[in-house]
Length: 193
Image (cartoon, rainbow, N blue to C red; front, side, top):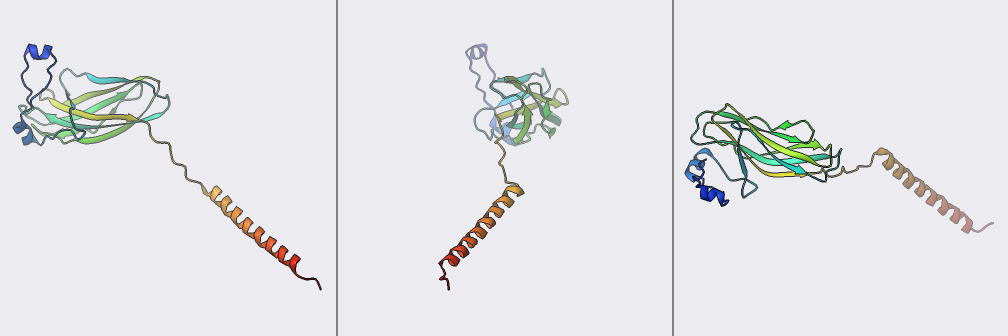
């Protein structure tokens, strides 16, 4: 990817728009994010740091589903294959990795959907993504978009065999009782000899 050269004036005035040369991108299979709009791109080797956000109003002990789209890519002026992945952390839970994906020289992996689960240990904790990759110097360049953190829906309860057996027994008992009542009424209505 080639980004537009910025002057100090443009940077100081928050003009962060970028122009990506479409002829370079179409040669490696790059496509915009499936989530639409902008996405994050981070070098997975040089000056590694995490992209993070504090999440509030969590319920400790509850499992949360994290879903996102990601892709591996490489600058079009770099030579050599790379291996890329995201390391994801949520509070004190052990970090989890996306699958390690090989990206061919000057290539693009295509967008991938990924999800994982974490258990909250506090009411407020940090969600972080760290771009990882090797070998150094090429660089591995990871893309991220569409991040969502949700609680799983409550499990649907399916009645076990005992309630079904109980319902069947009650139905059978009520049918037998109705038949007895009919016989009893019939016997009372018959003339006595």
